[in-house]
Amino acid sequence: MKAKRAFLICLCISAMLCSCARESSSAESSPAEAPSSISEPASSSDPSGSGADSDEERFDIKQAVDDNILSSMGLLLQDDSFSINEQTVGEDIASLYDFTNKTGCYPVYKNMGLSYYPFGEQAFEEMLSELEKAKDFIFLEYFIINEGEMWDRLFDVLKRKAAEGVEVRLLYDGLMDGTSLPEDFPKMLEDNGIKCHVFSSLKGSGSLNYNTRDHRKILVIDGTTAFTGGINIADEYINLTHPYGVWKDNAIKITGDAVNSFTLMFLQIWCAYEDSFEYDGYIGKVSEDLPPDGYIMPFSDDPFDKYSVAKSFYMSILETAKEYVYIFTPYLLPDTELETAIKNAAERGVDVRIYVPGIPDKQYVNMLTKSHYRPLIGSGVRIFEYNKGFVHSKVFVSDDIKAIVGTINLDNRSLVYHFECGAYIYASSVIEDIKNDFTSHSEDFTEITADDIDAFSEAGGYLLKSIEGFL
Image (tube, rainbow, N blue to C red; front, side, top):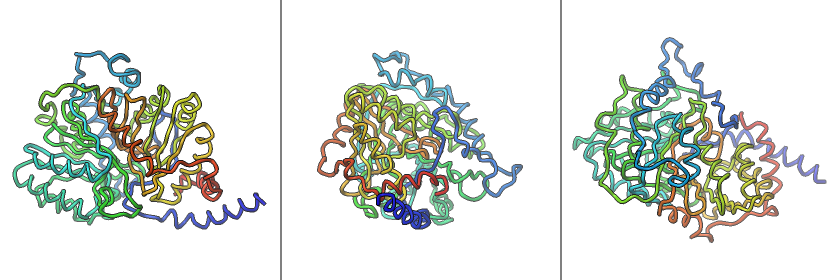
C-alpha cells in the first residue's frame, strides 16, 4: 500500500515539474546543483561559450574582475594594533584569516558602529536617512531592482543627490535587464545623472551563463556608512506588497573603517567595466572616532576563484559552536558536507535551530528544502517555519559572541555560483540584537517534528533532487 501511494505521489509530482520550473517571482533565484567541495571552483562560472559574441569580440568580465581583485590586494592594510589570534578576534577568524585573504583584501577591523535591522522596512528608512546626508558619493550594488514605491522613493533621493553634485553609481545584476526592468532603464538613470553598469546582462557583450550572478547587496555612502543584508530593491522586501505573506528580511548598517571593505568590493566589479581601476578619493575615508565594540571582518565570495569563503565561515561556526547556532535561511539546501556539519553540531549537544519560510516563493524549492527535514531532525536539529510568510534573511549567530549577516543563502547557487558578501562579527554588543531577532517572536514560528513531514513533500523533494540541475 505504501509503495503504491509513493508511486502515485511521484506521478503527481512529475506532472507538476514543468509548471514549477516556469514559476516566476521577484524573489531571488532558486538553487541549482553544484559541486560541494570548498576547494573546487564552479565549472559553470567559466564564461566561455555563453552569450552571442565571438571570442574575439567578447568582453571578458571574468578576467577583468580577477585583474581588479589582484591589483587591489594591498589597498587595505591590516590594523597592527592587535594580533589576529583566538584571544583577540576569535577562533573562526584566526583560522580563516589567511585563507580569506588569498581571495581578496579583507582586514579585520575594530568595530566602531553596527546597527541591526530585523525587517527590511526598518532598514530602508535608515538607508533613506543616511542617503540624505551624502556629500561626495553613493555606490549601490543590488541583485534585484523592481519598479515600485520602494524604487520611486530611492530614485527621488538619488536624482536629487546627483543634481547636487554627489557622484551616484548603480550596479545591478543583468538577470533583471529587460525582464523586471525596461530595456532603457540604464539610459533613464544616465539621463538623471546616475552612472550605471549592468553585471552580465543576459544578452550582449560580457554576458556570462545564467548561473553566474552578482547576488550582493551593498550601499556605500561617502565611504563612511555602508549597508548590507538580505533586502533588494522591490516593494515586497519592505512589505508594501505581500506575494508570500509577511516578508522577513534584515540588514546591518556599518560605520567606521570597515566601510572601506564594502567600498572596495563595489569598485572591484564596477571598474571591470571601466578603462582603469580607480580608488583615489574613495578608499581610506574614515568615520568619526568611535569607541571600539568587538571586531568585524567584511568579506566577499567570488565564483571565479577556487575558494569558498562563505561556506568555510559557515562550516567553522558549526564546528566550533559550544552552546548554540541559530540560522535564518530562505532555502535549506546544504550540500553533503554542510549537512554533516549541521548534524554533527546537534549530535554533540549544540542547540541548532534553523528558521525557514512558512510560505515558500517556489514550490519545487520548498519540496527540496523539506527533503532535508527528516535527517536533520533525526540528528537533533530543530527546524521552525515562519507562520506569517517568507523568511529571506541570511544570518548565523552562535554562543552570544559571533554572527554572520550577509547575502549568502544556504544553497549551492550562493555558495558556488554567485558573487556574495557578508560581515563576520565577533564580540560586539550587536550580537544580542541579532539573537533577539530569533528569540523575541517565537509565536511567529512553528517547530516542525518528524511527524509533521508529509509524504508528498518528502517524496517530491527526493524526486526533484535527481533532476535539480534541469530546473
